[in-house]
Length: 369
Image (tube, rainbow, N blue to C red):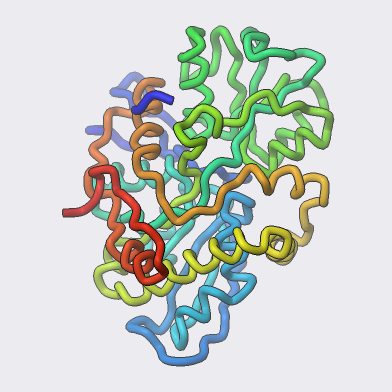
């Protein structure tokens, strides 16, 4: 896949008739529009680090399974010792970025678009990406009675989660590469792009109001369970079939004041990913148990068994693909060309990886000097 304001950014809206903006709702791969208020404070044991408490944010999504499993299995808390872990869940990127900016959380698992949004909106002063978490887990699922080939997508109604979010940008870029025209803001053109909350996309599919959707897991597998067919896995469009879907971010203030705590969380992330990859069935059950705790209902076996294999749990933040995703947003007219230099600080991650005998990862020239 090819590589990719003075103005006020508003969540979920474009300022009318101004320079192309980064949509405030350049949200992550989210499954809702509002932050959750539920928190879980985990008892700490052992030697306390430089902070009494670290506040961790993540989404109740399978693409955030590193956080789900690391929290559920106590892996993060073990690395933090006497520093208490307090977890908060969110259902949308803007809410998590707001919490980070307000000091309500210190570290978060979040998608690439809100990472870009948060960094550019603050002119590079609020966050750093300090690690990776997951790749993949995004699919184009269609009604096989109406769409049998990729060319059949033209003229159809395809849902994406939110205007300007990660999947919306990816779909608009794919449409452009097909040579089709779509107005990025209205979604009208050779394909009708319908921005639809992931929570209601399965019902929209069942009712026939959409012909397909470019969505993350587990929404994609929910559509498959309703008779949909996977026409395209986004991973197939990327070099080595990898692209960032979940980053680990930290507030710059917290990183400066508590680097030992950030390093401990990254150790927990690396160890969690290693455990997930070594124990896929146990990890899948652990993630689902955490989802049940958070939402009151686990995913059905058919859905989670379909969704899980398409997500790769990796430590590499795949920095080059973040730049490419930003470039795609620019090409779609959703974003003025951003300067992402300094968005990454991978020193702590590479220290953790080296200690674990793993290869270091690259910031693709976008790291702090």
